[in-house]
Length: 195
Image 1: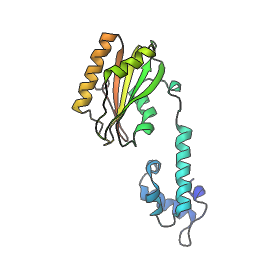
Image 2: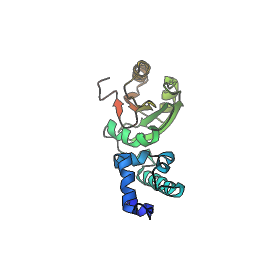
Image 3: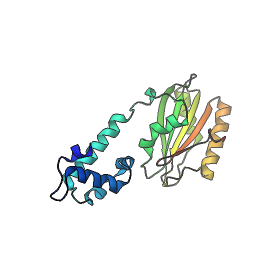
Image 4: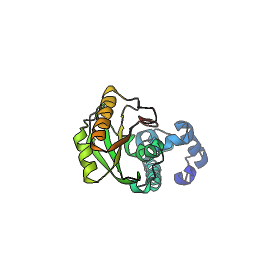
């Protein structure tokens, strides 16, 4: 498929050899989704035009495979949330904090970006989380945020805010089902880990 995108090789390499060279450079075809323009043009035989065509094709594939409406996904597990949010959050340079609001049958009503934080901290306040829940008549929520460092282990602040949200939720009758931290290729679920 990469050979078809490239269309032609160079005077020294056939199109098939050039495609193989690219795949060897990235080590694993899954890494192709994260390649950038600068890395592509460093490969002998890849100029500006070919790099742009490859990147455009990768982006098109991402958009085709992405579910654009969270109401279309079914929440069976923390992994289903991770699969929806990983492309949305894994490349962010700041922490983004989302809440997914659910009805009595755990169907998604809405998801909302509530906070954008710093490189290593999101400034979450329970008031905003639960205000939205009341406006939507949600009976439960799932909190999600990313760690730009890629390390998905919860910080002390993550543990504290999760406990606060759980306690406030109990008082208000809105269950906090989970808090999921997303890294580049992995996630941490407070619920799955008994927290």
